[in-house]
Length: 146
Image (tube, rainbow, N blue to C red; front, top):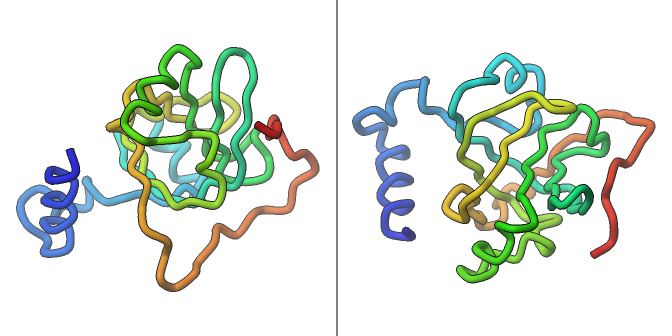
């Protein structure tokens, strides 16, 4: 899988083939309004995980403070072992930049349900040190210490 991701990144950087099209651009996890307009479509979304929580048989990767409106990635508890088997520790992703692939649905904000570890790519830290700019919120959501 790493070879495929490296080839994809190379093609994207060089604007080769379909990856030159804006249709295949990487969306920002911070742009909740745009992601909301992209529901029911397959997208690549990138951002820094602000917190990781658990509840209702799922692990939640939250990309902002308000889990009721931010972009979120969920993984069913039954699928967590597949991620662990390939070295993706979901519970350790807080503060990490990730790129997620999947169908965007709307559930308390735009969400991708990750069922396979290939959907979650852990990226190197942003060399510019950019962090998501959280919107002011009242609630912190289900970020439960793991």
